[in-house]
Length: 296
Ligand SMILES: C[S@@+](CC[C@H](N)C(=O)[O-])C[C@H]1O[C@@H](n2cnc3c(N)ncnc32)[C@H](O)[C@@H]1O
Image (tube, rainbow, N blue to C red):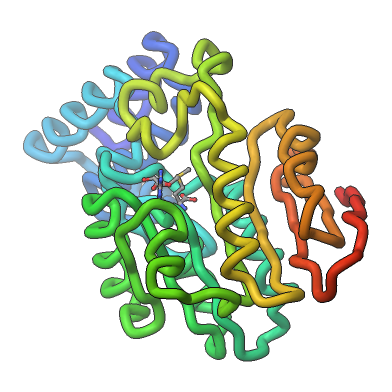
């Protein structure tokens, strides 16, 4: 069987099973089997695939038909141009989350600062920031020890292990316990935000394979934000920023939680024009009113 024939057959199987982005899945899985880049795959499309490689490839394609995300089969996902190892212990980093990294880089302006990534998962946000901001001291927290194993491995693989300190804990509790009051310039987080009411709209790839603690299914989706903002108020320096991702249509509900103690509240949209990130600044002095703006 030739490479192009294997691709075409895999495509047919994936389309028939209604797998989203079937062409991409067929290519990524074959790139994984052949350990090659996309360009090589196509320039060698007339190459013969050995029986052993074909068997491995179609085993992976069959696994994908069950709904298992391609990234859990290949064990990799790119984020901010970096290659992250992923396993079913962590959420697969999403491209829209790069917006948080972009915002923190803009606000930090390369100056020395201290930041924490709450709910780090694969470590993608903390490690992307570490790769860009050589002056930043970065902590990362997750409640899942298994997720932290993956994050620490990613830090090692990317040569950034000395740049990020990982902690196990309930949001920012580890720093509150250490009495780390008002020591951070940034609190950044992509928390689980899918509510129970939205469960019906969750793809089976997420529902059946990604860790529920990472994506939500929460009775009270706002409770996570309430806790995060309250802890961030205690830990941020005056003038420090909270930069937090939110779900589709959560913008009004999330910004409403930022009335007391915050100013310069703004919302930024992702590339699909969905309000995706909320930015809020801790009051520098008492008596400021919370002001809200929105930018695309
Ligand atoms: C939406 S995922 C984000 C992962 C990663 N930051 C990303 O953007 O791909 C949320 C993360 O929060 C973690 N988490 C859930 N509840 C937590 C809690 N109470 N304290 C700390 N982390 C928590 C989950 O384990 C998961 O890794």
